[in-house]
Image 1 (cartoon, rainbow, N blue to C red):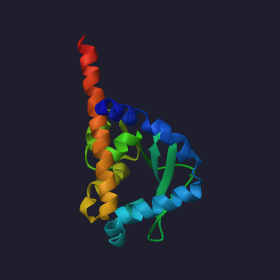
Image 2: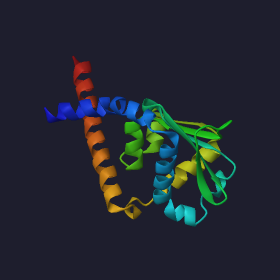
Image 3: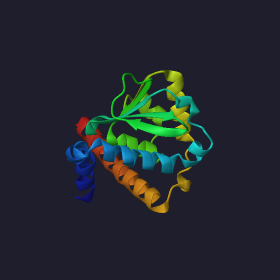
Image 4: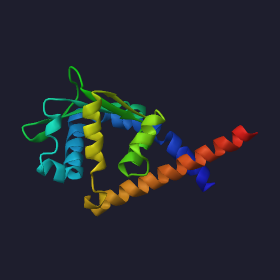
Length: 173
């Protein structure tokens, strides 16, 4: 019963989040993104590791929430925009998959080859972004953030495994 409820929440959760996420005004989204990125990439920003993104745009899209942000690096700080003329590289995925990647429960390369994570555009720039993401030390995150990330990822991972297991049983018949 609990496994079934978890499976339903994992499968339908993003659809429930879509409307409130879209209703959040862009200035609020921008503030949350900049604060979150600043926290996660604090060391990389201090070391100037984002210089490769100077005057270039990374599009990050959460497909099932219909959300997208454009991120660049200008004047030694991250910038988030609602629209740009053209992005240089694009990363897009479903909400659940992106949480699993962030918590290191799924490998981005595996999801890329399963076509669950899309990386399009300048492949060299995309590789630099991916390598920077891989270099994040999750232990450096504040304890409450790390706790929520890991709990969410564990919940999603178990819900997806439950759904995959039921599919295998149904396909066996």
